[in-house]
Image (spheres, helix red, strand yellow):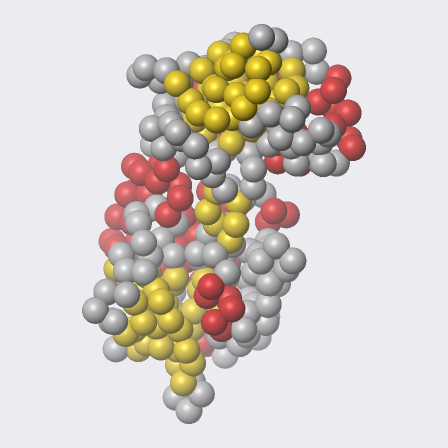
Amino acid sequence: MTYDIAIIGSGPAAYSASIYASRYKLSNIILGKIIGGTISEAHKVCNYPGTPDISGIELGMKFEKQAKEQGGEVRYESVIDIWRDSEEDIFHIMTETNNNQYDAKTIILATGTERNKLMIPGEDKYLGKGLSYCATCDAMFYKGKTVAVVGGKNAAVMSACMLSDIAKKVYVIYRGTEFSGEPVWIDQLNSRANIEVIFETLPTGFEGEPRLERIKLSKPYKGQDSVSADGVFIEIGSEPNAKMPELLGVEVDEKKYIKVDQSQATNIPGIWAAGDCTTASNGFRQVVTAVAEGGIAANAIFKYLSGVKN
């Protein structure tokens, strides 16, 4: 079988693309690693319209259920190779599961990003129990509490400012001697009385039972080798999956995010991209923007396969 669309990835953008593709009567298959992609790691998602206070994995399962009900196929298989048959003008996709091969007229890359991790003791243990990689997602769980932000670039500085409006106290722990974010955000951070900065220091571990209670430090701060906190936000950036774009010759920016136009099309005919792996949505990488990009990509492919010019 040759599908109209093969969607590479299994996060919100992928499910949205599948749902819209099915509504357009386009046969489609999702090929990804896990239900929901990285959203499945979120302890709670509270900013997706219509579904307040839902776990990331539960939201991912709802997306999957709707995509299947609409007619999309879902296979949890990791893609290892993609190539184009120029004579037949179709794409061949191979997965690591028994070297299965799938064929499609078009591709949507919805491979998302992976959060950079500290790789220190307790990081996995406290995920969803005081440790988060998304301040926008989880800030409201720490109203009136003490939190810490790890990092010193724009994402960390902006997160610290946002958290200072919600939390009682915000520590910023950074290995450098000064922040490297935009001056306007640094000025805002410096003006917040409830933000305390710990420079030239790295977290070395996390402690607490059953939830996070302390962050161990690489050097003493105010005579202590740790700081007490109810939550910690790791804001040291993320990396898009660059393997697929490189295989296909898809153009990326200096940070390896896939360049797309307003229809989510890439520079390669027949290939679109959606979600956190793209340069779209002003870099605001949230579930709601990923879902929107997936729908836009499916709509654009419907027009493309129908011979309609934008």
